[in-house]
Image (cartoon, rainbow, N blue to C red; front, top):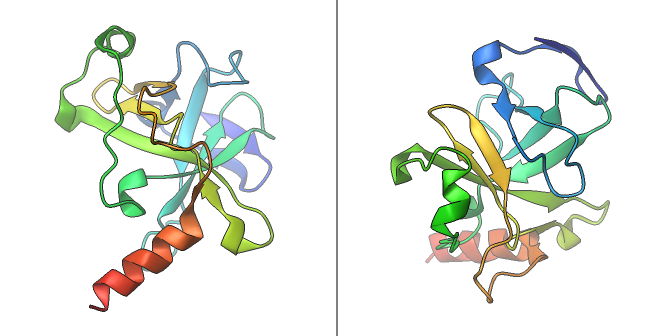
Amino acid sequence: MVAETKFFGTIDIEEEKIITFPMGIIGFENLKKFALIYDCEREERSKISWLQSMEEPLMVLPVINPNDIAESYTPIIEDELMKMIGDPADQDILIFTTMSIPSDLTKMTANFKAPIIINTVDRRAMQVIVENEDYPVKYNVYDAIERLKAKEGE
């Protein structure tokens, strides 16, 4: 599938890599087809990827695997919600959180309250509001990375 994008120009994504959000994502319920994009020219893959709409060139969200920035991210999601994307086994689930990346990178945040859950087997996905009361909407990514670096240096 060929798509026009704001940041990446014209891209060709194989059909088997398209992720379908049957209910869209929060705030963009009318957009259903997305692809995960990352800079494949870098030697080491960046922790930040981009969730690009295949239907709207201007719709792209930075996303990150929350386990890359937090010691333990275990969102509580109702079983009924998981059935909406095929009730995948734990090993067939990929989780991302959307990010806000301002010009001051020390204020970069990830939304731990509303992760994106992807069934990697059939590429169906959804964004949900998790039941965990201790997960913030604005988890400071910069501070988390600094804590992880300090811990690795121990």
